[in-house]
Image 1 (tube, rainbow, N blue to C red):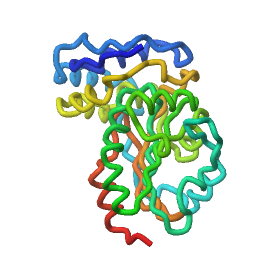
Image 2: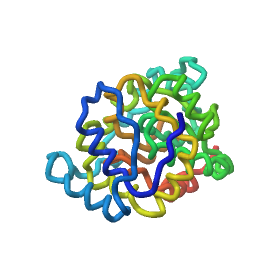
Image 3: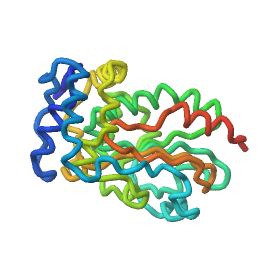
Image 4: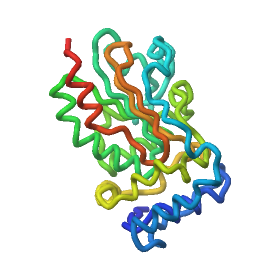
Length: 258
């Protein structure tokens, strides 16, 4: 089932989803109830006072993480889109390899389709700098495979973490307030982001939403490693609050490639 993402808003769908238990199936996405991105932002901002975690300071400094974070993550097993188990420490060269690790939200999140599309377009730039792109999403491997086919996205760069093991170890944000009502989520309501979203989700299907409905409340993040050294860390404050790619490129370009 393909779903057309219309320009007017995410805010109405946020309100629908926040009213259900995370263990229920999400309603079908209907993003046409508000007349403009400006109206959507007002609607989203009207919920700021409902959650006490809405204005938590950003924790995106490498100093917030243990120097051994790569070793901590190392034994975590995730899956290729084909369903093969792989240890985190096998995803890139742990001695000198440079890797951009993008932890998407879940495969059914339209904002993650937009981010994945942008990352796909950036692969030639990453490769020319000797950087490996690793994209991880929440959901079963079969969901990752559908996601890769429909977007499309290269299978050799896509992994599934259905139990959110890496997300939990990295302390990425989780909850209704973060997902639906955080002011950082309003970034996705700009006209330029909507246009990118529409393009990325032309083949969108809600079928790739994880079977574990609690996973729809998980936020993502972006990390850059050189070997086991963490060079850059970004924890999404809200839905669609992705790391600026210019920052990622600057980090990758400044690091000498072995």
